[in-house]
Amino acid sequence: MVERAIGVLDAHGLDALSMRRLAADLGVQPGALYHHFVNKDALLQAVADEVLQRGRRPNEIVTWDAELSLLCVGLRDAMLRHRDGAALIAQVHRSDGEALEQPLRAALTRAGADDQLARVGARSLVRFVLAHQDDEADDFHLGLSLVLDGLRARIA
Image (cartoon, rainbow, N blue to C red; front, side, top):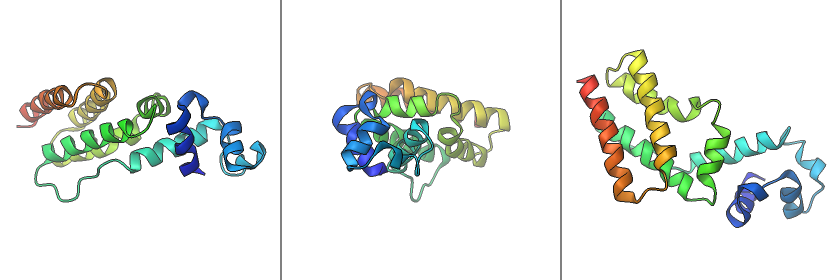
């Protein structure tokens, strides 16, 4: 179902992704979807989680800042891979960015950042990616490098 919902997202956009539209695409009654998702927000959460899961994940990372860079680029790539992907991720994680911030916060903590720096640094990175995901690739990478330079200076 989530895979089919991603297909609807890619074909028609976030505004068109509804329980009714997905049910029609699956050839079932809309009520059948409520056995799997309590509401549209739960469906969108599942779709956003899958989109993020498909993002690039660091395998073997030598340095904490390389890990942060790969996580941020992976988040951007995941959002750009799907029509309205950034809008979906921003909508689902508007009130609670913990899922997006947690791996970044963990990397910062391993690097020696205190709790406040890890929390604010992770939040700053997520907000940078969300705000600049549609920048040209070179501009995005330069901006990300500037943010990482600031974190390196604080941790050093």
